[in-house]
Length: 441
Image (cartoon, rainbow, N blue to C red; front, side, top):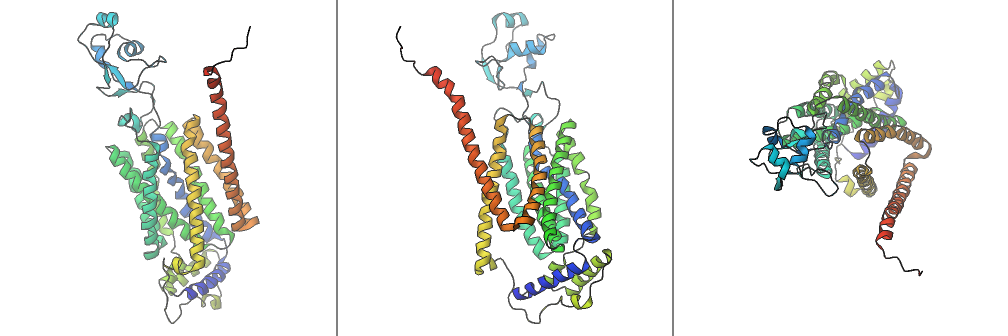
């Protein structure tokens, strides 16, 4: 479609959307239908709970054959070596010997080796991936690797569902991403290996990104003015609520498979009610489906109990000549779009880089996992609500400048604070080890 025609249709769409009601019953139902499933998008962060650290020791049940009445403490004292600080070494054990219990107690064991018969988790009250697949002693994947799998899913999901949105429409893209999210999130509960788990989580991340893109596109193309920004902030608030729900489930359920079963089962309900979603009239116009676009707009007006004037509706039409097709190359040919794309891309890269660095480093503070996730999710809701006020008062440009400046100042203060803490902790050590000059009698 010609770019000029798209601009003309934008004006016509704005007039039509004002005529059918800026945020009537139809738009309210639309936002609710596509953003309520956003609560379940929080399962992208399930790795925080199913990979939680658990205390472990080598399985040394062999000694129970010669001393069946040994307590757990006695068993550990006889079969596990200790570190210099007196704690048990979690990845080493004494090799079994064909002695009786009295000889073992009298002479002790000397030859150590890595764990021969797996591990035990004496203080574990829940079943996680750690004790399911024995991801200890160097076998546990680091948090950066887990995050890389999710990032790869986000990247491929953006590319795949971006094309699906343009080729098939917003409505089919939402259904396809929601179906993929439902099947693979629920199916994660039935994986039999760690590699299968990673593959399923990759597809879940892909579907979550696809649903986010599709739902935001559909919502914003039905809304006008500040309602677009409100809808986007609302979706992110739903995700924060989902993280709190996920945290509660992980805390109360005794098995990691139940977490995905209980959390994934409600997704099947969304497959049925999501069929009530309409297609985007803007996308219909790009595919030259003018009559279908008018029918969808008239249906929306009837739900809002409004009437679109015929002269306003008839302005929504295609031109007679088709010259230039809109494509990705427009970002290269159009100087303004190219500059805007590069600047916003740099901002997104920088902000996301800082965000994930802070997320990774939060583990170094020794906070409880559930408290850390809960506090982060709770703080995001009022911050996003404040962003709505800032956007309405200062506009998009100055809001971006204000938030980036605030981020820069806070990151600078964190560096200063970290340097001060490091100096304070290292100062006593340096004073103890440095020679004290002789001051005389």
